[in-house]
Structure formats: structure tokens, C-alpha cells
Length: 452
Image (cartoon, rainbow, N blue to C red; front, side, top):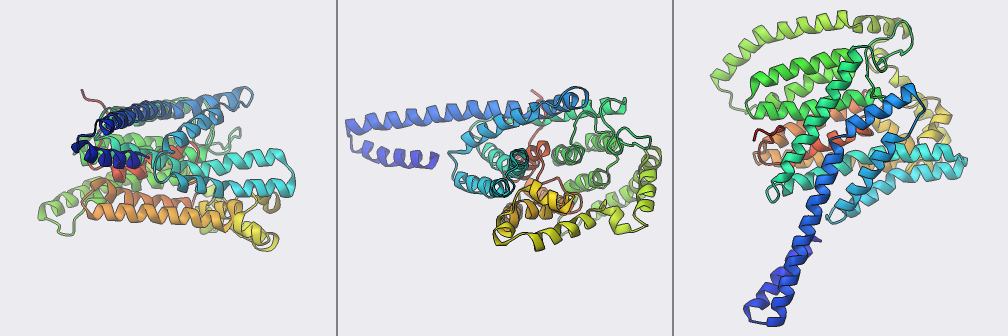
């Protein structure tokens, strides 16, 4: 739509040179219309970014009510509002038809499952789950549009800073409350062997990727702006949060997301001074990090959890690493292969219908989506990931430092999503995953705090 307006204006300006009074009036009107559109878009962007800066807080409040009172759809209502605003805002971009097609592909299975089972409660739940798969691409295209327009509207940068700053602040408050014993344990809540904490963020698996996505964005900013002391301090804080959570994904992931910024900027020609720095870091830093992780694993109950998991799974290392997901996938695949017809294999029947037959969710993104939205849903996600990888690689080749790091981040979360799941199909974390991927379209270093 914006492109059409610019094209109309270009044609009309040519007529203006020919001194046509009538055309001059139209030119003025078209320019005014374009300015009004820009103002409306700017206000809508501001509203959406403001809402997104409180999404973590809303999820904490939602979790508090779920744990202590009745279950209220506070978070779902809030995210539905954000979804509608994002769709309305993106209705003017050229990728909007693609977004609508993607949204429909994820939702088809829910309708087919409803038609097959007649269970409206399961259908309603399937709609929510299917919408989560749409969260990352929707957020990506929004932030891509924001980053590409920041040079025309620098005020948006301040709003983007607040989204990350407030989100990490609320996440820190949540982890602090969890450390004090409030909220829920991450594993075995209510039992004597409970370990870890999720605070008041009810969806524990989403909490891990939420921390990793936000930490990646901040760590990348600090490193590219050469704030190495703050980078190291922030790493220490994030490691502490990871030990409070105790999830294998977050414990391993926190190392990866903090390695991505320096590793992604390595050039093929390595200077001698870089080797000297690397030797110093390896000599001092690696033993120190190993010692810190040893203390964390032994003092925060992680080692006890691993030992119990080994005993329960007959010392099968793969099963322990995947938290029994390999068995869930095998059971789910049998249902998909034997109980689904052609349309079921192609479009799926929603998450709940497959769950009813298999007895357990796959909890691995590619298989979870395959079982819920069929082969078409999985192919759509894979093509989307390939588009992101290609874009990050192409922009990185042109010298975009953010794009280089995003490419590594994409590879990491794609692997992690097929080991631990709940990443590309994440609700609350989906906004920040989309934000992190869209960073490839910002050409200048992003400062995540206002230093004015």
C-alpha cells in the first residue's frame, strides 16, 4: 500500500511540472494522505511496543492467579489483543497475504479435529495452540518492519529499548521471587524432590527460551558495542537465573547464546593479538566457568535430578538427554502413520485429537507440529526457517554484524527446538524470538537503554 502511494505521487509530480492546477491539488491531497498514514502507523507501532513491554508482567500475573485463585484467561485476552493489533498493523505490508495463509494452515487441523471429535473444549484449546505457532512469524514481520523504518522514525528506537529493558526487569523480578520460594518449582512441584523454580511464569518450558531469547539480544548489543565488562557481568546474572531454573536446555543454552556474539564476528584472517586474547581467556576463563558450573550443578540440585532420571530410565543416556521425548515421538509417529488418513497426514487434526490417541505430546517442535497441523504445517515452518537462514546469511555477507549473529542463533534454536521443544510454538517467548530473528534487518548497533 505504501509503495502504491509513492508510485502515485511520483506520477502526479511529473504532471505538476506541466503546470496543471488540478493535478497540483491531487498531489497535495496524496501527500497529506501519506502523512496521515505515517502518523497512524507510528501511533499503532507505539501502542503495540508498549503492550509488548508488559507481556512478561501479564504472564506473571496470570500465573499468580492460576496458582492461588481460579484460572482466569488474563494472558490469553491480552495476547489476543496484541495479535489483532499486529495483524491490523501488518495489513499494509506486502507479506500480509503470506501471514494470513500461514495462520490458516496452522488452524486447519483444529477445525478438522473438531469435525471429527465434536469436542468443542478441545477445539478451543487447539485454536490457542495453533496461534502460538503463528506468534514467531507474526512478531518477526512486525519487528522487521519496525527496524526498517527506524531511520524514518527514530522515536521507535526508544520504544524498542523499553520492550527489552522492561521485559528483562520483570523476568528478573520473577526469578527473584522464585529464589525466595514464591511461585512454582520447575520440576516436581509440590513433592519433596522438587527442584528449580519458574516463579510465577506458569509455562516452565517457555520460561527457558524466554530467558535465552532476551539474553541473546542484550548480549549481542553489549558485545557489538564493546561493553565487555557489562557483557561478563550480564553473563554471570544469566547463569544465576539458569541455575535457579535448572532446565538442561537453559543450562546449555546460556553458554551458546553468549558464545554466539564473539564467534559470529570471527573473521577468516586471525590476527596474532586475537590469539593472545584467546589464550588468556582459555587459561583463566574456561576453568573459572567450569568451576562455577560445578558449584551450580551440585548446589542447585541438578546432579540429583540427573541421577534420578538415569535410574528411572535404566541408564539410557539418550532418553535422559531428551527427557523421554524419543519415546513420545515413537508413540506419536505410530498414531500418525496408522490412524491418520490422507487428509489427517496432510492437515492434521489438532493437538488434542492426536494426544487422545497417543497418550502424550511429542514435545519436539517439528514432530509436535507434524502431529497437530500435518505435513503442510511442518513444511510451512521449515520453509519459513530456510527463508530466515537465507536472509541472515545474505545480509551477513554484506557486512551486517547483527545478521551474522542471528544466523548462528537460528541454527541454535532450530536444533534446540528438536531436542526440547516449545520454541517455535512458544506463546510468551515467541515475541522475543521473532524480535531476535528480525535483528538481522537493523543495520546499526541497537542500544537497549536510553542514555540521553
